Length: 122
Image (cartoon, rainbow, N blue to C red; front, side, top):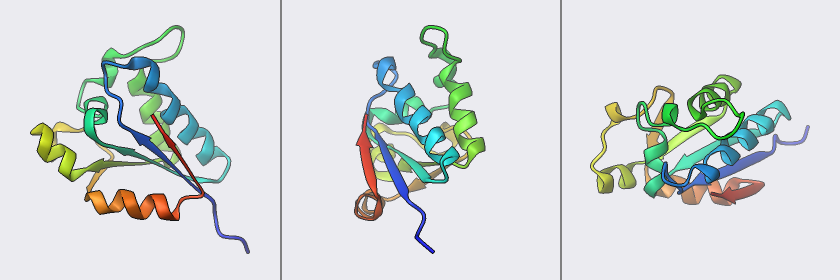
């Protein structure tokens, strides 16, 4: 049996760039529906997206709030990873993030990139 495909979405854009926030969440949710393992890795300014309460303030057009889309992604099985080194750089701690994220080291991004069947950056 063929190994399950994997997609990695790297989120470096933050709340100040709302047009770049929906795509990785929507694409990852769709990937899960297609039976593709999807991971969103947040680093640098991307950490501002997963701070508690931040995504609730983002809504573009007729789309649901970003926080709703993120919860749908998590419910669908999308993995949300946070770069520990970026957290330290930004002065953020585990309790600052929404539920459902995992804090991992920077080496994890390298491993995920090498193992993924596709990588998209936002």
